[in-house]
Amino acid sequence: MTLFIVATPIGNLGDISFRAVEILKSADIVAAEDTRTAQKLFAKFDIHSRLVAFHAHSTERASANLIAKLKSGKSVALISEAGTPGISDPGFALVRAAIESKISVVPIPGACAAIAALSASGLRMDKFIFLGFLPRKKGRKKLIESLRDESRTVIFYESPHRIAKTISQFTEILGGERKIVLARELTKIHEEFFRGDLSAAIEFLESKKIRGEFTVLLAGLD
Ligand code: SAM
Image (cartoon, rainbow, N blue to C red; front, side, top):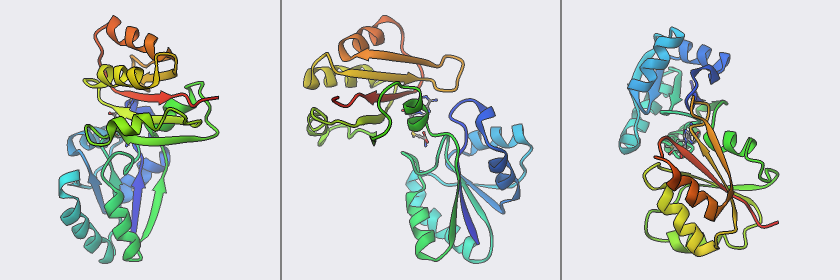
């Protein structure tokens, strides 16, 4: 039948769309990366659909199961822990498998940390690239070096315990004057934007105990 790719909030539950709630209510199966987060969403919006787990490590087998259900006429809504499924989250393999099986795939758009961060960053947003999470080791340095002459805004995700190290590494490779924006805890109570250069970003990160989730935006060269 139909596979719905449903975006869910990245913090503030008010960011779910009416259509997303309707689809989650009417779907035969909701496949969720994190069933505990999904249960909170279900409780808040009075959703009672069948919930199944769909995480990164079980993607292939779980995909095959869901494709079988879709082929038997069931509708499936995919949600990730937060934001848009497939964007640095599980989903890609399922979407591709559904398309190969001629199943219709329908996006239900909504929150995405990268796009929310970009929209309020003050950096150029007519052209940008999204790198997801940077590689941890192999190819990391080369990738950062390749951004030296990049003219587009570069967006990537980073975990809170690695952010300071990452910004130091960027400073070493690109120099302290490159402009950067750190979007922290978007849509949540402690939402905060740091806008400045890489040297100042290091000071900002050292100035207080860093908590929460970060989306990083590196300014392109003008
Ligand atoms: N699928 C999600 C989306 O559409 O944004 C992204 C999932 S990815 C596993 C999680 C990463 O997204 C976090 O480590 C962080 O870098 C970024 N992120 C998620 N929520 C965020 C928020 N509220 N504020 C800032 N960054 C966030």
